[in-house]
Length: 167
Image (tube, rainbow, N blue to C red):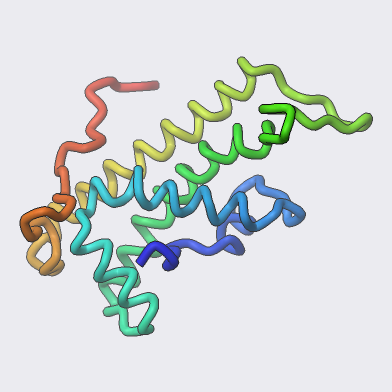
């Protein structure tokens, strides 16, 4: 199920500041990472696998489609954006990690990049909490949440509850 993406490269580009000329391999890698790190701990492996299967076989229920489009995709979009900040700024070459430049482009400082990354991380946390709250309120409608088989990733209902109030 690692090949199934619950948000497309096109959706990322249409709903974010990512330019159309960004190579899809960076976006797809960031989506896979976001699904593994940000999404699976919230929804659990069984529900994640069901959603991937539903996308692959084109048999999602109306509620599963709503779950993905309204709750999961905002999590993934912001997690991807947070991850892309460094991926697109630095590349690994034979010389090591390098930062490419263009004569017409000003490269932001590392402090600026960290600020941008934190901004997307905070948004991602908000959407993760919203997803978790939705699943808890509707857990009877999702058979795969939260009960998981032994040895599978279990949904962590408190995975991303932030005790701090920002704002």
